[in-house]
Image (cartoon, rainbow, N blue to C red; front, side):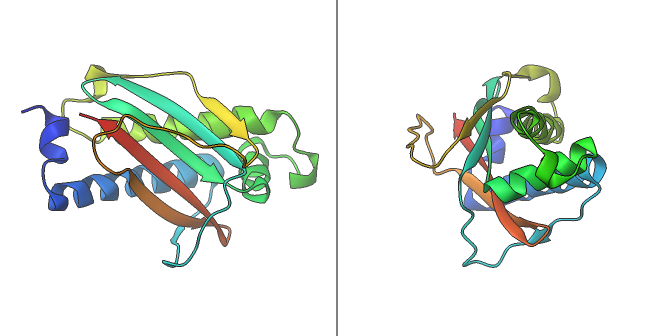
Length: 161
């Protein structure tokens, strides 16, 4: 069984995978944005006005997504680029794409033997909220909901095994 299939074989191992996803996200936000994330309350439902996605191919196939509202996206960009939030413009998509890319890379490197066996696609960023995504994932997405500067956002991983 591959390292990924072993990691997703049981509910306990899926929980471990979700913990790695959360850790990878926290590390990227701490390093790149200088921000400590906190756990979101269960009822926190992030608005999905900005969605950044990175595809994974190889030993791990799927899509990692970061979803947030425009205020959070502008603030993330502001912290990453050192500009005022009200001065953020077109570079917001680049910044959110790069954040998603870094979370995906950090996550895959936390799984033993997966680093070189999984490639990442260039990021895709969608703005707006009137869309539906369809997935060929075998199981429900792993989702982590966190607070960034008290604003809820989510990171999800849909895996096709």
